[in-house]
Length: 248
Image (cartoon, rainbow, N blue to C red; front, top):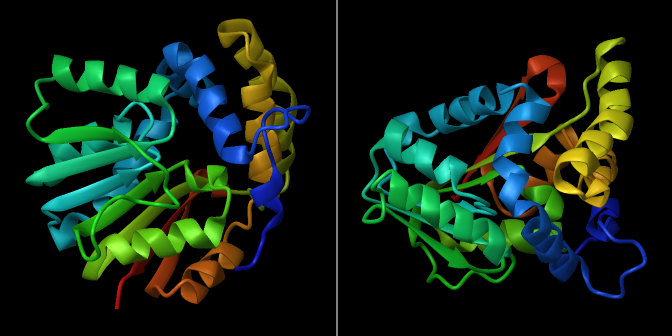
């Protein structure tokens, strides 16, 4: 499988651990502040982005949904409200994030509907054709092997099932692009260090967004990985993009 530049971007450059273990450690360290930082750093607009992505599944009326890189379960909880499925399974590599996600799910009395598992997005422990829909919100940048992860998600989708990916991208508008780059380079790492004592996590955000093959390049990778009817929708001047593809 092809290797992409972003596959080699890691949070802790001096560490001898592989990308997956580094990502797990990074999210374990910031889990207790992750939800607050998400809302704070995005000004709450990430909620709008998630809602838009979920709307891309409305016509499908999926009953069995897998949320990959589920983190603290934000996407899974929102899908339970807007899509009324029978079952949502969330998978993440960070046990710290999942612990907070389980607390949120219990508080909202959703234990019977949403189940969270520790797992690797590139080696999903589910049979083929298990899910009507698979979602990933701000998680594909963290894959160690992008194509392998995409093919695994395709494997567990049922024929005709849909993948929805939400990911940061690069604004093209002059002025917006410069402000966004400045924000990612200086503001986010600074605030991240101040609030969660982890500058690396938000420095990694900048590095991984810059290296990620976004837009048409990512759509081409979806095509190559076996998805059909692939499309993309840019949001908020291109700061974020929704990608969709179906299993034949």
